[in-house]
Image (cartoon, rainbow over all chains, first blue to last red):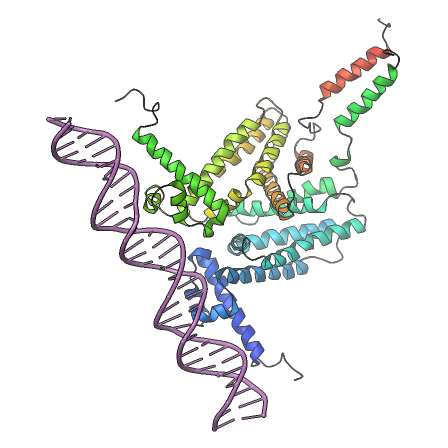
Length: 231
Length: 231
DNA sequence: CCGTATAATGAGTGCAACTCAGTTTAAATG
DNA sequence: CATTTAAACTGAGTTGCACTCATTATACGG
């Protein structure tokens, strides 16, 4: 076994990886330009300076190639997000950093994000990368709860849907109107979540006695007051 | 000019419309079964009992046919939503009714909703139907503000993204986990929005005993405690 | 420098969306 | 009713593109 496998750019392993990523680059370019259906494998191969058949040595089919592009995108996003978050900051601050980064990124690379929807039904390998990305949110929340900055007992997965769902729909709205990044979206989202999550009061609506509870209690009082009416 | 154009089912106009909707029915069936890419025009034509070429007399291409299916779906959803909402109820109640209806519907017809994403880039005619649907939310909000039930000055479009974004992502999460409708999602969403939107009123839940009911019970207790003491 | 394995090629194949020349059906006219 | 005219329908044929595979080129060990 040789000592240095990653020094020279002429190892066979490295040549393969270079070819693979050049194909991915070409695919990303053509897919984002023309959309999935509009993109031709021939064009991608030409852009990557390989023969059409070569593409199929690296990816089983067009869908698989798309999965590769999308997976790499979300992996990149995960790295960027971890860099955008201050490790020692409070949970709320970290959430805001993630929200800003997320909204910025998906606006900037809207076409690639849209491609994600085309990848899902077929292969599920690229979903792993999305899961990794989403896990960043969970980590922030769990750390916040652990450090008593956030109240315990709030279902994280539901808040996750609020967080990412709102940001993605907001991004779509902005794109539809040809507007750019709007910080008030992040501010308002955090205010909304903050009310039920980050505030000192650990009383989310879910744990509050409902009117039904009140009614039950009242009825029990009334029944106790009038016990001997019917024997 | 004939007097009755919409009585007999044998007018040429009506035959055309019947054929068109039978093609749409077939397309919806095949698309939801096999997905957009998996669906063959030949299968759709066969299902609708017409020749393949006939499909192209009604729709320019496969994308256009998909737009027809998706557009009709959202139009149906709009009608259903308007039926699900009590016209005289408070704004918060109406929002909850819409949320329940929306979550229920997109869970039940998840495949058709997914098709929506395949339709967007091409034709934008079917987007109109989506816009009509979304407008229901706006109407509720505007009426609420008008009747002073909701505070003025909150950007409606941002709340709309919170509302629909959260519900759609929640639906996806549920589907991913093979879970069914979860009412706590609606409750928590409204609690979240309620904090920043309707803090005057504690959100009344539709099927729960109203404050009037509580009041009646309280009065019955009071009457029992002080039966003979009339001033 | 040869033999073998691995990588790359691109002309060829198959399948499905889309077309159109020909046919059927319905409406209009006298 | 018969006849003309227009509209609706058909399905065999065309086209475009994803995917295959027999052939060729390249790398590498002995």
